[in-house]
Figure (spheres, rainbow, N blue to C red):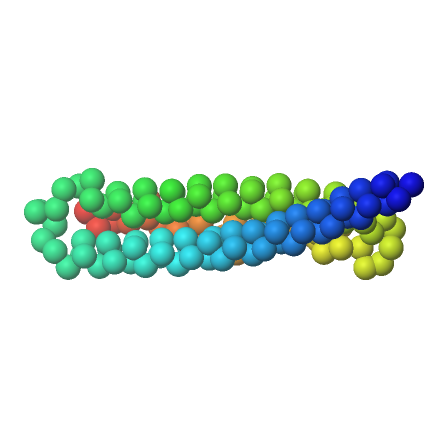
Length: 144
């Protein structure tokens, strides 16, 4: 019986460490998403500034599409990172169900899943499509 208790304690400690590691990883991925968004805006702004300050006739047309490409890649990368967060959050929610059961507090991920109506954050759902649309329209407007 003592062996079973030690095994249960070991498993509980293992899951708690895993829980802590996953929560830290979610925080790091969230910070990476923020950095990607910031760098994409800085790079696109710098590209447009450079394109507008130089003679249009000497710049290849494809250069005007680079901001569109960068915004699309940034959106894809942040979407994939958000999917990874969702996967980790789902696993944490299962761990919370196991450890918390019906107790209150019920665990952050369980609380979020029961109270969150949106699957994708509103700011990301607005930011990326607008950025992609603007970087798609801009080459037509500037080259006219």
